[in-house]
Length: 220
Image 1 (cartoon, rainbow, N blue to C red):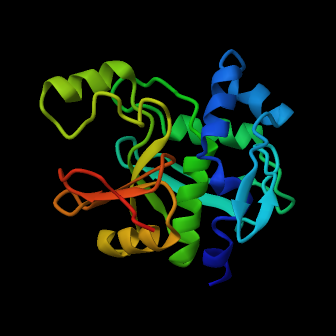
Image 2: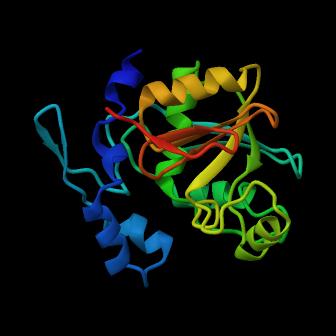
Image 3: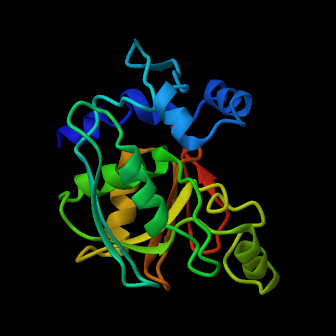
């Protein structure tokens, strides 16, 4: 599919040191300020081309529409968070933040747009119109600490706490198929949990793992 070939274009190469430094330098700004002023203008090399993406506009990506179902609250959200011109809808992103809130405390976090795009790319690769069942989205520090203390499947510095990870199921698609699609895209973290029947997707560097096994970076 054409979506697969366009994956590394523009926005999805924002995981560089340059972007991390940019995030640090703008730490005091709100998510809305970041989106409005296009503070992320990373320069990434792909196929010999220099690409200058931004958070408020993202070209070269599939339709920015997803349907989320929160398995803890039974809430459903059909949302278009980015229009055909590549412009993000801030109110729609607020709705996404709300449905992906911590189910334990109710705390709403600011989700990294890159992880939303990661989910969207995987969804589009698999057909593009199925519901995304949210097992875990944003996780409050309080709830994450509880999971860590209880020996549950949670990292002390979990990307869920940073709003950079989502654990998902996709209606009618086996988790193993979801994992394979994500691995072929080669973007972000991909964790496969066969017993719990979900796939972890995040906006960190490309790596993959299964269950409780140690994460492995791609050799590519």
